[in-house]
Length: 74
Image 1 (cartoon, rainbow, N blue to C red):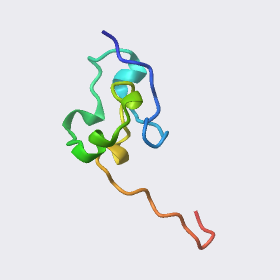
Image 2: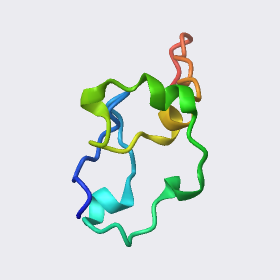
Image 3: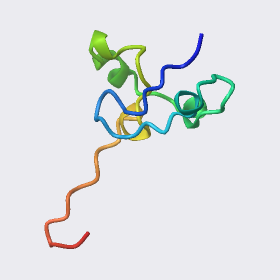
């Protein structure tokens, strides 16, 4: 079995930085190997998104998105 070449997080659409998806080999170490996934996030995934692509770090750990700046600075 080989990893699906899915570079986008199925929750937010941002890059998931999945090394196995990028290299096509599960032997490639991935950032998520030592990260605890938020069970509520996994439970909320729609069936169509399950087992298709890795979530990004923010979505996997249920961290809030950075707040948008309103003062005109980046």
